[in-house]
Length: 420
Image 1 (cartoon, rainbow, N blue to C red):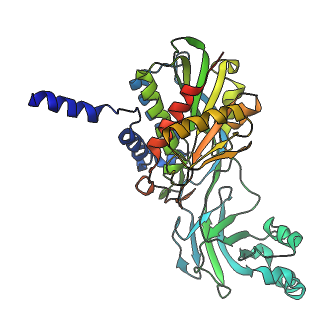
Image 2 (image 1 turned 90 degrees about the horizontal axis):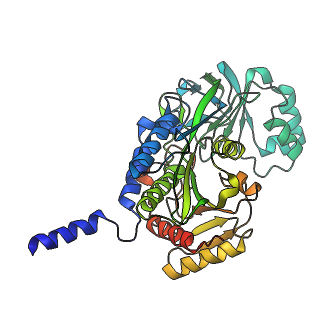
Image 3 (image 1 turned 180 degrees about the horizontal axis):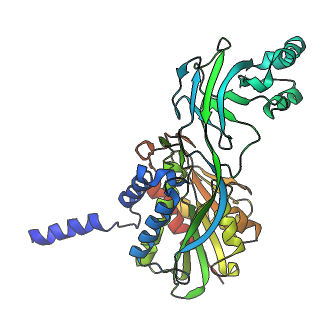
């Protein structure tokens, strides 16, 4: 009897009763955010390592590829920083990633330059603006832009931001360093710097930044589960696995919420449906190139691995690591009947509150499918989480407090979808 009780208890913990597996999801996030994956970007094979990991998870769950490979390969150009950018303000070295960061499209620059302070007074006061234009040796200067939110002379501000005066470079003081991905270089070098590290009294900047545009080969990772009753009709789950990668050799962006959390949900759903055979066929697509401009999803819509006409509904998942402030469904107002089904599932399970409606938006990988007339929702969770496109979007910072509720909502919503 004691052995039987032990077996029942062990089985309870090994097999999640309701389907979701938050322990597995947390492991996926921890893995994808580790330094080995180099921010799942464009240096040190980051996104390829992530693609191989996702492929292994699909294979282990028993999902099949379309054709002979799980990979759909394509390429694009990207601006990268193979070595650590280095700057000194009046001889004081700043820390990459915490004190400053180059803009994603920053071009190569090396040398010592004068610092010229530009604030709202410089632009809005005609006398000060005239003196700024007349006295600045622009080609020997870095412009330091500070506190420009209240500038009234917008045309003059735009001239400065676009570097019409051909300054050697531009550096903006920001409260939060944020990065992105650039597929080409800007016309001039530009940086972000945190407050308190530079002032109107600062004189010189010594800068050494090397960047180059590479042609980057990457891949979407695609797999499917054949439906039991309607194998030619697909419900599709998507999430992008790429993130921002690295700046130089020392700073990487883990991308826990954006979007290791969405990949965790994607893989958890794949594992669940592999053992709970669906009525319809299910496709699972992990896109690369999202951070570079939705490039992976766009490529897939142009060169689909199965007929886009067979897709009855698509669910895209991005930023799935919070949830204390509810969930938002992009395209909810475009597809009110589907949103009604989502509301029914959410109310029945008492999962997430509030359930926010949003209209059409070009903000994640659902977009190009939506533009082709394919019904789809993009889900993202809302919560108190301060880290976005910065090195602190780490696995240990991600709460995932409503992960299970989000999983169950998606599962129940899918069960509400009836396809003729």
